[in-house]
Length: 169
Image (cartoon, rainbow, N blue to C red; front, side):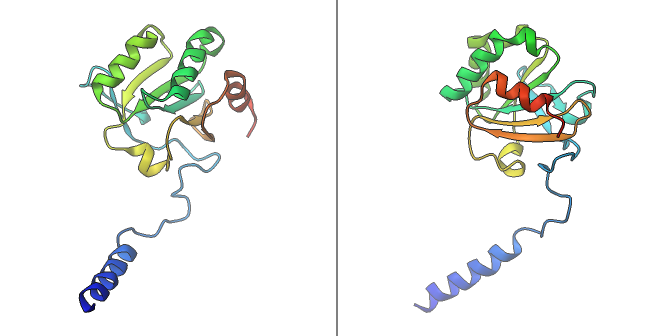
C-alpha cells in the first residue's frame, strides 16, 4: 500500500514538472500568428523542407493525412479533380506514415505531377505535438503572408476550403 501511494505521489510530481508552462504567444493556432518552423521530409526520403523556406505570395494548406483514411482519400481525389481552380494555393500534404505508404499514396493519386502539391513525412511528429492534431484529416490554413487563418478537422469540401482561404480573417 505504501509503495502504491509513493508511486502515485511520485507520478504526480513528475507530471507537474514535465512541461514548462506555455508563455503568451506560444500557441501556433492563433489567428494572424506567423507560420511555425518545422521540417518535412520529402518523398525522396533524403530532402528536408523547412517551412521557413516556403515563399510568401500564395495561401498555404498543411494537410495532415493518413494514407488509409477514407476521408483523406476522398479529399485528395476532390483536390486533384479541382486542381485548376486551386492552382494558386500551395498544398503540403504531411503524414507520419511509413515512407512506403506515403509513396503508395503519391502513386495512387499521381500527386507528383502537380506543381502546387508537396508530399512529405512528419518525422518528428510535429503536427501531433504542436498542432494537437487529434487525427486525420487535419488542415492548417495560412494566408499568402504565412499567417495562420484556421484549422479544419475532418472531411471538408473543396468549396468550404476555398471559403476559408478567401475569408478576410
